[in-house]
Length: 190
Image 1 (cartoon, rainbow, N blue to C red):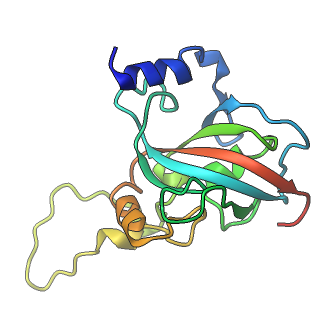
Image 2 (image 1 turned 90 degrees about the vertical axis):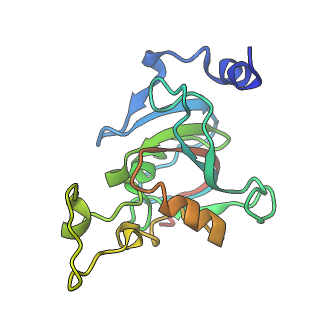
């Protein structure tokens, strides 16, 4: 086996379709590690480390398979100190909707993969961004909207450096995976 296949088997071979859960809005997630302690609830402030990933080539269910990192925080991959966390207020409009629901019920020390569809992630849902243009003729008086205009740069978690922002700008309208480690929960602080 190749190194990638061996790593994938090590991480995901024991996972079955029955292990995949859904949030009330239908976002799919899987617990890679179950933590202990008080579970996170809407209204809490959670401390997390995360990676936002492209779906892997061998991802059969949108959650498993080895995936490539688009941006991360807390692992020392983007210039921040390893172990650094970011605080997210659950139940606020600031957090990507798939994560806002997908983190509820998670316990400190747990690691979870959440499938983030574009409309539940970083893609803005305004009239212009919801339209798909397949046959466009450019004329000198036409204004063309930049792709960046549909990216919600204020949604958390967010890329922190230029390179990760540019990578995310190319991928925000694709389904991604958020791999999140819950470090701590502060009740009712959101």
